Image 1: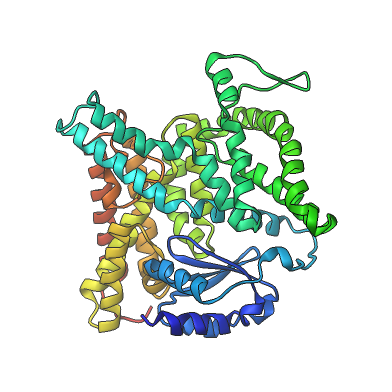
Image 2: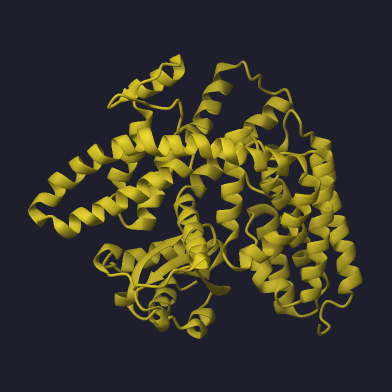
Length: 456
């Protein structure tokens, strides 16, 4: 791919460099916020080499490149210097519940997207260790095993700090100060008090016994509030005082907010959210097939990341594993990979055959669904129906057999299968779920689209 040509066309399609506020990316999408959204040229963007589609979610435009997105992002940021979102006035818009929900989803997904790669690395290491332990090659009592496990587990303990950096990148505020918002909740004095069950006081008010480790919503709220403070100080303080007064005032203000307000909010929130979360887990035989069929639709609108990341992180904070989100996603991904492979094998059109095989490989082993969704399923609704039914039936089997995901950041692909093996989720159950998802989807492809090249 000619990345220089791609980013030149990309810049033109986005209305010029002066129209771009900030850019970021996740595993497959180049994400952009614009000053004047009317200058977004969808036809030009969609015609660029490597682009598989584009969509607007909330106030953000998402351009789907697939696995090449990292290379495009690096070339773009190396070639262009942005003004920075803090220098640009946001346009005032009326109140819209839909817009608020979309913006929250964009914020969460943008923040978490920053750490998807390290989450994947640590998750795969845990999966490898699980396989070695299950096969009896290495004992969990071995100190080498324990050190590698600790190395892979550190990302979850310090998850809020990494998340703070991603949130700061999304909000355009100081990344260093954002890290402080999370780090203060890991101060030795506070952690020791938590471990010993000692109640500390701040201004004579009791600080709740609440650990931010493994949590993600508290730090997102904290960094958001800090970003508002930073913008306030930058706007109203003389420039000579900003770098001195702003960080000092921010730490003084955010310390009681973090310890007394945000922590108390999420003590209550966790207690409340555990009620429906537990109910959903108990009735997952109904919920999981619905989710399995909905994931591709959510992916079309770029909402899948925010939804599944939020759901599975909530479950990990409650149970230490995810019985719903990634497990249903596994069935969806197996079904999507099957319909793509079906097209790749049975199509007589070279372009469709190449798209089917390449997107199937990307799906089965890379856990990236956009190429198959945009390049195969959207162009043939019969394959979409086959995928939806196959994923739904596979998810019912997964719910009945009780498979669960034990590793945060685990891939819902063939390479991430070890992450679904644990005390209450056997190898046989996982393999049966995958085989059923693939066979049922393949059979339905034969029923719905016997001639894959026929018009539909």
